[in-house]
Amino acid sequence: MPMMKRRKRNILIVLAVAIIAAALAFQVEVTPIRAAAPASQPATTRATTTPSATPIAVQSFAAFTYFETSCATCHGEYGSAYGDAAIDELNDTELRTAIHNMADGPGNAPVDPPKLQVLFDYHKAMIAKAPFVVVTKKESADGKTTIEGEVSPDASVSVAGEKASVDGHAWKVTVPMAERYPLNVSLGERTLERTIDN
Image (tube, rainbow, N blue to C red; front, side, top):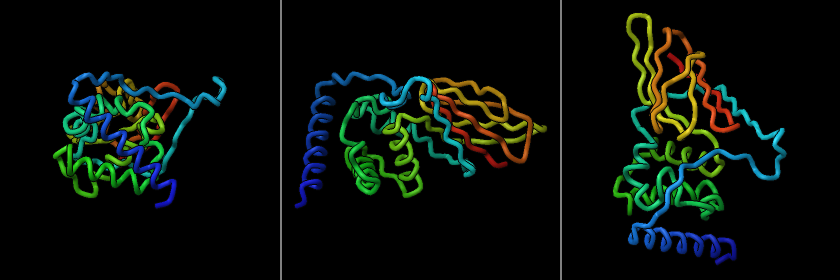
């Protein structure tokens, strides 16, 4: 077995044992994830904007609620028990496989491929300490559209210039009906820009 694979396997085993021990002892200390720029960047260049032309699809899968219900017992609130764990050393295939195996196994809440992709994206955002957002509901009536979703804790959300109300990881906003809605999410000095199509 190549040295790198053996190292990753050993790290995963140690991580699994540590998580199980912490869960059994009920002494998992939780701290919400906060965005932070790498220490190597000077304070004047820490702000990061992640623009994307890819619209966000409305989906019924609420990644944060799933994680808090099925994963947080072992991995901490919003993944806080990961700490500097080995998940950031996994490549994309290994991370996707680990999430799938945890959902099917200890999480006891299997997910289909589209939901697995959302959980994968959520974990990638956790690793990068970047904002993450999902849109879970959109309803239009009387010239107004109400949009709901989930977002990284402590983030702010605005849609079409209107500030959303955020409670924990849930957010909601009502805006005038439009063809497309600009979405802006800020977490610390990091910003994520997307659009929501009508």
